[in-house]
Image (tube, rainbow, N blue to C red; front, side):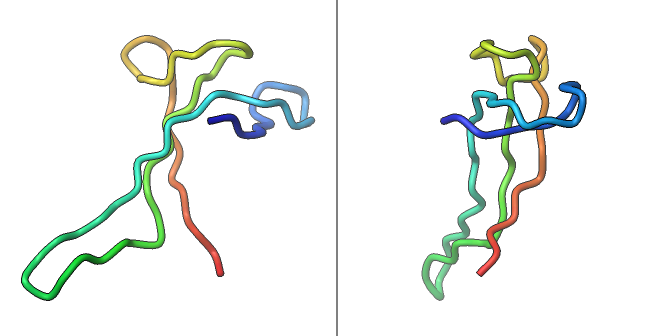
Amino acid sequence: SFVPDERGTGGHLEGRHIDLRPYILSGASGVHILPGGLTRVALRRGSLVVNSSQGGGSKDTWVLR
């Protein structure tokens, strides 16, 4: 996936590769999809690395209706 990001770019939007991890709960009452998740993001332009141990970062993600 690809998402615009303005961190470290002088205030303008610039695309970054991401990995979205939604929060989904499963239990006796059924499956519940929460309105948020964790997005891991490549911090350098053109990088595919999104895991923090190799130079990526993370952001909270919220779905607004």
